[in-house]
Amino acid sequence: MVGRELRLPPLPAGPVAVLCGAGLAAASGVPTFRGPAGLWRRHRPEELATPAAFARDPRLVWEWYDWRRGLIAGCRPNAGHRALARLAGSRPGTTLISQNVDGLQERVPPARPLLLHGSIWRLRCAGGCGRGEWEDRRPRLPELPPRCPDCGGLARPAVVWFGEGLPAGSWRRAAAAASACALFLAVGTSAVVQPAAGLIDLARSAGAVTIEVNPEPTAAAVDHRLVGPAEEILPALVAALV
Ligand code: OAD
Image 1 (spheres, protein in one colour):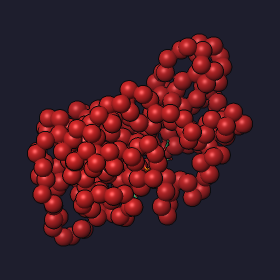
Image 2 (cartoon, protein in one colour):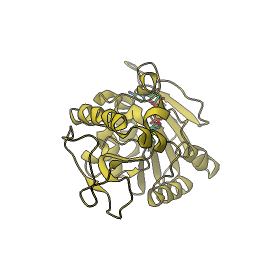
Image 3 (tube, helix red, strand yellow):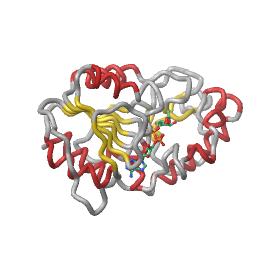
Image 4 (cartoon, protein in one colour):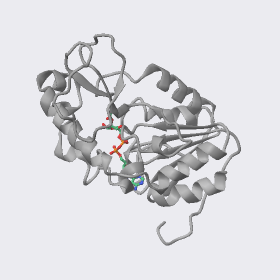
């Protein structure tokens, strides 16, 4: 759609739910997971983003997260994040749902996305000593792997790894929003990781109009596709919604 006018489908009144994926932050310089330059081309998920990987080699897993923290610390929210914050602030009944752990959307008030996969800026005790999650925004950690301040055991990133369940409260609210919305946007996600991708089907079967925003059409079953980058499409789409 670059250089061309964006042709929008009819947009219903009523609540909007938005599921975001890594593509939303691509223009900020955060690498996506899949695709030509995706992180999973260079790293195997089972070596880095699973409980078994962490048990086997916590330092290797932390080196990868520490590298990503350093990279993301130098990134800024882009026009797509700003458009979604505008939507959240201007259209009552909007729910932002994010698979991203980068914290970029949260930096644009009043956006407060439901975090389905946690946050790379939060840690928790891997031993489960009972201490709650804590925030640590230092771009590079002084000690790898970091330790739990309470029990001295290993700390882990407070993100969801393959094989783990999603945070129950965020998931419940996301599923409720998908079931009740009139319009559901799937933005910058390959829509292959479950259960997050299932929210698209949930919304569609509940009667919502579903629209994908992605430069590469995915296999997701949606009503309409806006083919192009989120940072270009979202400002125009949101302008039509608020
Ligand atoms: P993926 O890396 O699987 O997909 C990124 C999507 O963004 C692709 O469909 C790209 O075509 C699209 N994309 C690229 N640039 C874009 C742009 N400028 N605007 C819009 N879209 C763009 O990322 P996710 O779908 O988020 O899980 O991946 C889902 C989960 O898989 C992640 O949350 C992560 C990963 O394993 C965990 O960490 C648990």
